[in-house]
Length: 145
Image 1 (cartoon, helix red, strand yellow):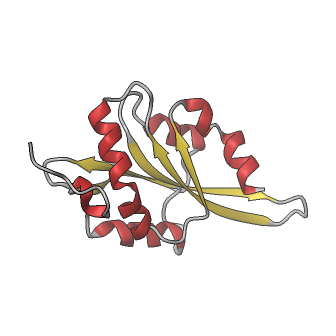
Image 2 (cartoon, rainbow, N blue to C red; image 1 turned 180 degrees about the horizontal axis):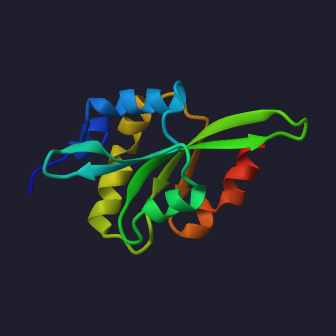
């Protein structure tokens, strides 16, 4: 078995697809999407954009896009109104790693997380979720306020 270095971001061998940063900027600056879901494509050895959600899609649509038994990374642009009646938006980075997913998938996503977070510099909050209760809309609402 080959020795794998664990001290660098490249320990998983997973790169990041070239369009990831651009997709993030489209969500962040242009408000082109409500959410973006990323997956690790093992054959390509990189994180890729799996799906983008239109600005008209709901939080329930976003949650339905997260697989029940597999890991993903996601960005969600959460719009809300403050107590002072001001419209605001906060971007959440969500590391989705359900308890029912394969151990190998959990390891790959865990070791690749810093690399994708570096590409997505500019999100406001991070959530590590292992079951649906940890990504309920109230969790985002509480963190954003």
